[in-house]
Length: 277
Image 1 (cartoon, rainbow, N blue to C red):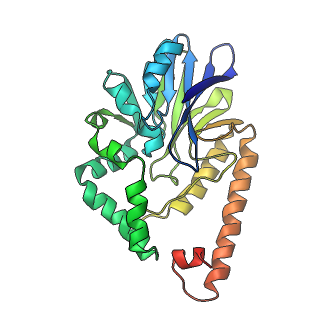
Image 2: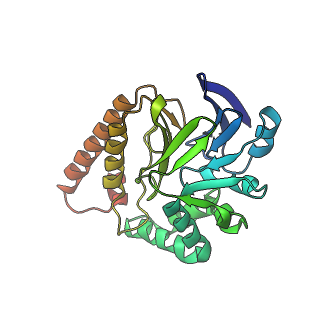
Image 3: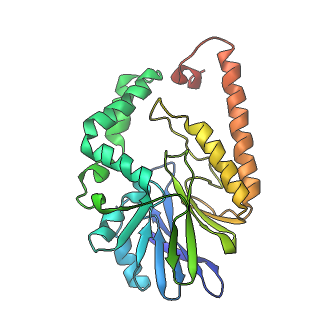
């Protein structure tokens, strides 16, 4: 099911939230956003591809001129092929495109590597196999013939929509190259899964050579310094006090890190054994 509501409007910009149901119980739905300025339209994120988003936008609006995807997770990029196959420009961070290409080049190797991290973290092999068997969308990233046509953007690049300039802000943590869009003169940031209001973003470890939590906390600080007042996240409710929510997230992770230290004082444990404590 798809539905929409107007969540922001001033003299030269309107933002419509388009919510799409997804088959992920913990999330229930994903928010995409249609930005309109001077009869030009930018869509931020595309859902999972299980619902015909482009057809919906064509029916209720005047189509879309370009698309920006905040990161490569399936509930954000899964609908991108519907736009790419209609010659609509789809943009995302260059680094996340590289991750997609790695997955598509050798899916078995890419997924086996992530499975191994779970197993080394103490998860039973049968549970790991079940997790990936039930994942709702790996195959969409692997099999789509259109995803190779996504265009990469770097930190600071600007997407113009009518009278509006939206600047790419790299915010690694939730993925290694997650990106937000900042509309600086309006104090607005579209944050994907970087900052969520009612739930805490997942900070996954899928490689041993990175520190995603350190990156995430640095990215929170980076957004705080940009001083946006309103954030539009990909899940749950809109954030009307960005500094306050960032402070809550930083405190949350501080509390959790202290819990981990307390657990380790009892002796070495895998993440799985710590979870079952």
